Length: 389
Image (cartoon, rainbow, N blue to C red; front, side):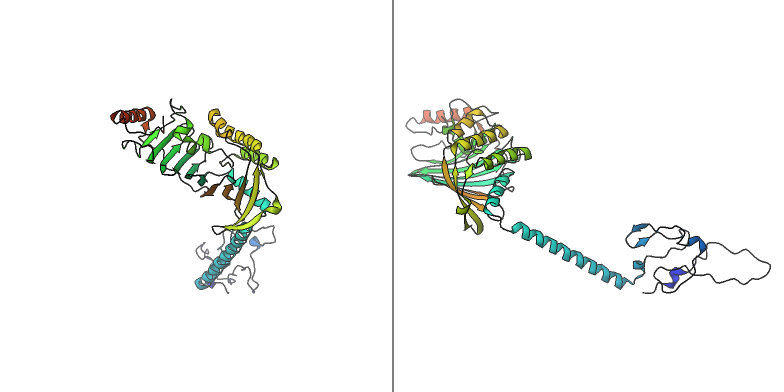
């Protein structure tokens, strides 16, 4: 493209010529040399580029003028007609989009590439120890007793874990349906249904009752009667598999113990591939040593800040066991565990689970007892629930 001639004209307003006594022949002004022009033109001596000048680049396609006081030559790109500039801009955008798509596609392929069984298992352990929240669903059946639980965890701060639980227990014609909410210091329970040999006063049905307050467990209550092991974080954050948003150092300590001690012992050659609800998974037949699991729980309890009473209760439930673990082949997440005792636990919604706020206006435990005793006095023949007595 040829440059615009107007842009090369000398500035006629820079000064006027003084009068002379007789006209003299004046050479016509010479245009400045244009970089890239095929025509050779004279260069004023004061702007000779061989005199030690180094061009300073200060923007895309822009070079500092050789003579700052002279008329500046416009950058070559600005001399293009609008239609050509638009075309170049369009090509640049298309090229950028293509690059982003290619890079993103490569990253996606690498991320979704199936891991080896050992890699997936280690990834599941690391992911569990850096989890901020999740949802756990558990079903169990032993003889005529069945239980269904949906427990949501907020483990963003391991020193202040939050738990929200919905539980259904049934045995023959008896049934209890309740909800629980807990922190390490405050716990609440709400009975929605109690059917069978016991009942609950209508004034208490569906009402939140506070059990623990500021870390103090009321008199005349215990873990079994209040069923707090379903919703009290002091109990439910421990167990066969531990989740939490631990620090890098804490996570490394727990991870090293689990891997080096072979806490979850399996044989790599026995790992099978399967589909679980449409997800490619590895199935591990795992053997869990009770003694090692107790040590692992003690380490985690210290990081959570769990009280000794709850820890001792939890450790009393730990035994040697075997289980099948289902871990996603691509994401490295533990999805499901089936134990030899018939308990199935499914995990989901990692880091996106949200919990409701703590119950408001809960009935204090002593007030609950007063209402319960009053109901018994009014109708001595009616067997009221002793769930919290």
